[in-house]
Length: 146
Image 1 (cartoon, rainbow, N blue to C red):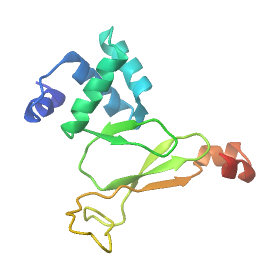
Image 2: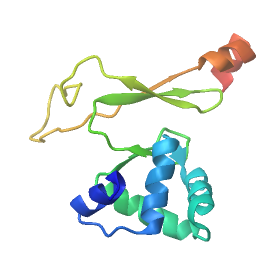
Image 3: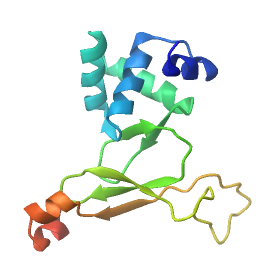
């Protein structure tokens, strides 16, 4: 049995070829959008509808095997849910997304002044900037308009 088969079963999900293909694709291409995940899954198992990929992504996200991230102005992206304490950097020029560790090991690594009775278990932060490749490729005035 593989790691993914074990994790699917432990999450109460059946092991299916589409689920295994999507998990493998997201594992190899973190922060991928649905189109990239679907194309990669199709290369692995053949015919697979985009709707089936959406269904798998939602099931895996609900089971907390995947994490959905949605930077403003970008389609949803998916990564493995590892339970670690990290956030994301998004390049304003090319849209590349990179992980950035939180400065504290506590979860959540940010605290709200007024929790209004909520039990907060996660904080999501997106940092915006320009990646090293785009800094070399573009002039500084291009960054502000990206």
